[in-house]
Picture (spheres, rainbow, N blue to C red):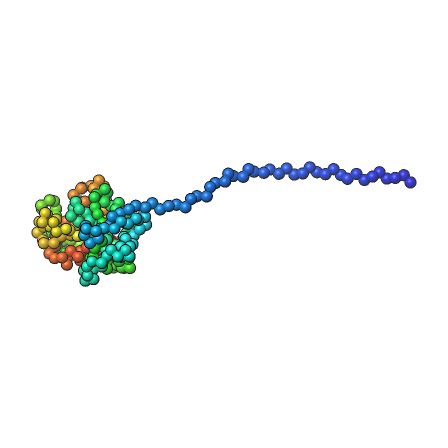
Amino acid sequence: MPRSPPLVPPPRPPPPTVTVSPSPPLRPSPLPSVAKTSEHRIFIVNHTSHILVTVTPTTKCGEIVSGAKTQGALIAGKDEDGGWALFEICRSLGLERPIREAELLEDVVKSWHGEANILIIRRTPLWPVLALYHRPKNHVQADWVQLEAKKGKWNKRHLVLKDGSLLQSKSDKGKDASPLCRLIDFEAFLVAPHMLEQLKPPKPFMFALKSTLPKSKLKDEEDYCHYIGVKSQEEVNQWVKVITEAKVSDS
């Protein structure tokens, strides 16, 4: 028998074409961000001693006071004088303000707009209002005061704190009420004794309302600071207390 021809396998198909995309270039891992720091001099009780503190943009004013306690720097005074608090001192205007513990120190310093103010820790009876755990209630405060209309001129006005604003009027009925300021842009300050002698208000005690905005942002520079005369230190403390609480409520 004749032999069959050998079986020839069919040709293999060509291998598939594989396109390889180039790998993206390796990027270096980002370095961990380093918080910007700044150093501040904090006076203790008066101007004879101080500490230096390094803060970040998230440092709260209450942390400054706690750090000073830890260092043993706060030993003067008696408990009946109140708790410890950080104050901002506006020397050019004769004003000082006890700062809430929750406020950021950098925000306080920014509100100075280049003024040569200082920071000092001292005791204050207003401390409970400043504490981190304080939960304020909405307040409505109203009373007769003396308002400095311009240098050397004072007007009797009925002052009302309501809905985050201070309103002034010539009568206690409030029909002619006009806004004095909005608390979102103002803080309540205590007034130094030498300013009382200089301004000579009709009432023997004063507090002030100062803008946290620069004068250039105001329509009238005279609105930058309002001095207000009252009958007693108790009235000063009450106005500063309720304004401080009302501002926390609105923030």
